[in-house]
Image 1: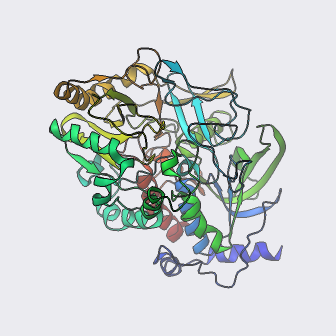
Image 2: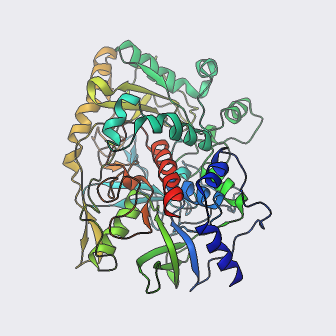
Amino acid sequence: MGDKSRSYKGFGDVSRRTFIVGTSSILGAAIAGGRAAAAPPLTPGARVPALVIGTGYGGSVAALRLAQAGVDVQMVEMGMAWDTPGPDGKIFANTTTPDQRSFWLRTRTKQPLSNFLGFPIDKDIPRYTGILDAEEFGGIIVYQGRGVGGGSLVNGGMAVTPKRENFGAVLPTVNADEMYNTYYPRANAGLGVATIDPAWFDTTDCYQYARVGRKHAQRSGFPFVFVPDVYDWDYMKKEAAGTVPKSALAGEILYGNNYGKKSLQKTYLAQIKATGRVTITPLHKVTSVAPASGGGYTVTMDQLSTAGDTIATKTVTADKVFFAAGSVGTSKLLVKLKATGALPNLSNEVGKGWGDNGNVMCGRANHLWDATGALQASIPCGGIDNWAAGGAFAEVAPLPTGIETYASFYLSITKNPNRAEFTWNGAAGKVDLNWQTAWKQPSIDMAKSIFDKINAKEGTIYRTDLFGVYKIWGDHLTYHPLGGAVLGKATDNYGRLHGYPGLYAIDGSLIPGNTSVNPFVTITALAERNIEKIIATDL
């Protein structure tokens, strides 16, 4: 009991000055000096000062800043810890040989590229709490990372700050000066963002595919831009030189990256562990949050086996709860809690404003003199910017198959205006999303503003063998789910959920459907902004 009361003292007595001291250096150690380097485990029935649901970008920012301000934090994560090597000596499975580690509770892979050269490439796998969730709704598959580190485990690491002129459309209620002067720089520093060496890019075999993409873009009058990333570029140079184990040059991307990528495990989560104030509990799925009789909130969670079965149910009481389960996870949980009466006073805006960041994929078949290379770094480093004129930004993406494909591949982010809503389906006991595949047509039209022109200039055609049989567009998926608990609507302007003091959304659910670029830097920066305000005023 003594430890609990000391936690509360720290929670209540945090001053703004103490907080600022703790965050003045992104790499600063915990200010609670001398504390043992291990936080107490999650104990059923315990009362905790702060509980964070999810360990992705928003949750990691919240937990780190709370801990640096002297608050004990419990983080719960539905996925695994991803800290133990498998039989092959590696933690993560390779892209070309998916095994049980690759997918979340599936018996068959569901890869973004379902076909190659006319043949289906998905394969049967054992059911396991793997790293990539392909969550299917009526009109869309949403790819999400599962594990400690969330989406940072499975993305390409493209760490893009939106252009200043586009920010007003992304987060209209947020002060852009604050974001660009303080919170974007803080996020980029905390995430370890850097840009490829252009001279190395021009000569290395592994980016031949991107150089072809640059040439075709520029010949059609489109600007090619280098895009920052959280990959360790020095490590990639060593991969190319053959002096370290290969990671990006072994095609690792979809199911985790074993060496070179600076996922949250290596940045924010490493700092979190160093504070000694945060306990991370994997394989726990929160099912309910409801007001507790003595104040705070009763949080109920299921402990999962690696087969996905519930092996225990636990409850704790938390003074503050931060919803950071990602756009889909947070939205589904809040919609369920409102509809089933656990949190009936949540705003009617909960579940609304969800978008896919305008994601759409396509491939182009190049001429034989435009080979894209058998060796392709799995980490994208450039894009084609036609946002102002055509509403599309296209990432020049790899196809790391290990063979020459003569194909250029792209993931486009577009200014798609369509927004969907999560609703509670009482009969089925689950949350539905009303997205329609037809709503991808604006994204296709915007992507065509780039690729129709390139094809006409180069005398090339679209690939039709990547997403099915004679199917040009990957219009069935998103990697960038956003919205569902929109800032300034479902919450106040700092993520406080209306109707329930002490409940916060602090992830991609706050962003209304589109960021104009890859979203994780914006999610991180917004979380940095919001948690600073919350610590200064609510604790």
